[in-house]
Amino acid sequence: MTDALTIKAPAGARALPRINSSAIVMTIYLVFLLLPIYWLLNMSLKTNQEILSTFSLWPRDLTFANYMTILTDSSWYMGYVNSLIYVVINTVISITVALPAAYAFSRYSFMGDKHLFFWLLTNRMAPPAVFALPFFQLYSSVGLFDTHIAVALAHCLFNVPLAVWILEGFMRGVPKEIDETAYLDGYSFGRFFTRIFMPLIASGIGVTAFFCFMFSWVELLLSRTLTSVNAKPIAATMTRTVSASGLDWGVLAAAGVLTIVPGALVIYFVRNYIAKGFALGRV
Amino acid sequence: MEKTVNQKAWLLVLPVLVLVAFSAVIPLMTVVNYSVQDTFGNNKFFWAGLEWFDEMLHSERMWNALGRQLLFSAIILAIEVPLGILVALSMPKRGFWASVCLVLMALPLLIPWNVVGTIWQIFGRVDIGLLGYTLENLGIPYNYTQHLFAAWATVIVMDVWHWTSLVALLAYAGLQSIPDAYYQAAKIDQASRWSVFRYIELPKMQGVLMIAILLRFMDSFMIYTEPFVVTGGGPGNSTTFLSIDLVKMALGQFDLGPAAAFSIMYFLVILLICWVFYTVMTNLEKRDGVS
Image (cartoon, rainbow over all chains, first blue to last red; front, top):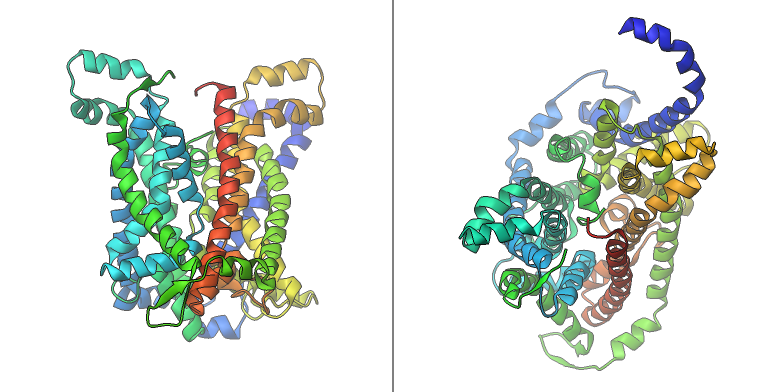
């Protein structure tokens, strides 16, 4: 390996300027992306006293006290639990109802299918701010206010259309002959769908689940409007702390870091599908 | 793919229809209901016709918010699209570093929106934030809670930080679909770097770039959480965008009628853009054939 490198060196030198400019752009961009995140991490590992008294690029006095505060105080960690509960409920609901619908859109044409598909898209694009007040009243009147299911249902507004669009994008890649062969072999629709079709698009389902999870996780406006105590999401817990005391920067930063963790953990597995997911199954 | 005509497919779509109707149609009808009525409290409503729409159409507050919104969307598109293309072109094509870049770039996209706000709120503070502290020590006056320019700059840089990766990832996906043969042909013709970009890469990226632009426009048009956390719409009303204004009106002041009329006009604008988006998507699929 080292031999090959030394021999290649002169040739590499000539191609150097172009490669370098790309690498420089990329490095600058990544530094720009990571610097604010690093700063948050940095703050979360400092004591409040250090944050406010000295300005340092790295924690001089490394402490995990901020994380301990969050993980031992139930009003903090319940925020994460609440968020996770409604996010998971939402993901399950979205995938379950979206699977058959996406199959119908990808395989059959029926009356009004194009209009229906477009109407779903408009819901993904609808500003949550428009829906905040009516949601609040609707869920209050049916007695679902401040429950996990209310937030999960509200997030279906944009996650179900998203799931249908992404899944449809994956399903159209499966040749129709497979369906027809299965029906000829005497499979019923239900058996074919669960035994043959779903394993075929397993990666698609995984990616869709990831995106439902993510969009439900990052949303704040609706989840904050629909909850007060019992189902209060971590995002709302954080904003309350900012406005109330506005002083506990260390804990705030630690809470922020902990909200980044779930996404960062699974991102590696979906890295090649991220563009497809954000473009609603197209690309 | 040839699709068979089958009306029974409606049965498969039914669950989605019911669910989305519950979470979209009912609330939307509530909004329509409020927009044509007035109230003196006690849940007594009476017909107000198009009064609220008339009022909102002549309301300086809404036009100002709309103006700020359009300016904001225009600025971030003008920065994010070229920057995203540049980054996509600079990314390694394959191998270990391509994965590293993909993962790191996607990171800001997965951060809860209010945490994005918090990150920049901390990062920009003059006393404890790296950015604010550095600028202050360089002698540049910077305070995003008081100076109009600083507030706008912060909100824009934050959005660029948050969403440029989306444009870059989509453009990168477009670049990946270009066969190597194209580049080889260009090499034989001794094409310059610029003409490779102009005549090979840009046309191939056209479709995904359209999607990226529309998505960014749409999402920036309903931006709420990030500027709300950082500036709270201030200083004054200078960063109060449409959604922030609407939430203030509806949940803050409980001005149901005007807020509802506002919502409906807002929604109609979105519907229009959405239709453009859908047309672009379907044309794209027709042109490329079925993937």
